[in-house]
Image (cartoon, rainbow, N blue to C red):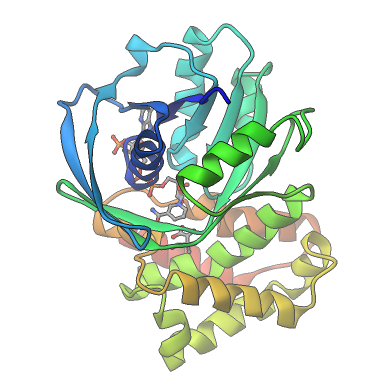
Length: 299
Ligand SMILES: NC(=O)C1=CN([C@@H]2O[C@H](COP(=O)(O)OP(=O)(O)OC[C@H]3O[C@@H](n4cnc5c(N)ncnc54)[C@H](OP(=O)(O)O)[C@@H]3O)[C@@H](O)[C@H]2O)C=CC1
Ligand SMILES: CC(C)(CO)C(=O)C(=O)O
């Protein structure tokens, strides 16, 4: 079977994670960074095994087409990237958004209307320190269509090759539901860990955080009925706890952003939920408060 080639955009934790594992499994995978960078030997520490991988970087100015594009930037960085890509990508292509947050498809479709877009819910944890990539949560990646007309069958080769490179990757025919669940999980774990400067495990082990998590989730109840109608409150709570457990040694991406003085994705997570609630004339006062706290830490 022909090995697919990948263009990965965004030389952060998730971009490096996928590039390293894809190359390690014999794929042509090119990592696009924002500005020129010298090649480096990256030490990968992973529950799947440690290895060293040489990474070469390209910039978008040197773009060469590949079978699949993996976008691994932060939600607030997507619009500028899509603007850039619309200048250089002429042929329809398959894009996977390896990102947290909602409202992403609308941004892609505005600038790249011909692309088949898949979304990936990432339940891995990863961070970079110097020349080391630490893969903390050996989780899973759930992918599914958000605008593409291709079927699971037509994406079989892609799913299989992604799964062989960095397991487990699975396809979800009701991906919107998976995205909604991940949205809720991120709306609880990410800001609480970022505000308190603690690992994901603290959502379970720290009594105060655990109570705050439950209270934030309870406030979402009327919205949960709309966006996750098939799940009970108890099932959703269990999923939040499961992800906190599976990624217990991880610094959430929001905590990493705060520590690196970067803008967080709070507007695309809790902000999105607040907007959904406003449309139903519901106020989410605790989530509004949590956004204020994150914005104060960003400044
Ligand atoms: N890390 C984790 O454990 C997890 C992350 N996620 C999600 O995955 C996504 C990626 O996260 P993560 O890798 O941690 O984020 P990072 O901030 O580490 O990486 C994003 C990278 O994209 C680069 N970038 C931004 N805009 C462009 C552009 N126009 N062209 C080229 N490169 C660009 C950034 O460059 P610069 O630094 O210059 O801004 C940065 O290197 C996010 O949505 C995050 O929420 C989900 C689960 C876990
Ligand atoms: C799954 C989780 C919570 C892992 O840390 C994540 O999505 C994030 O950090 O953004």
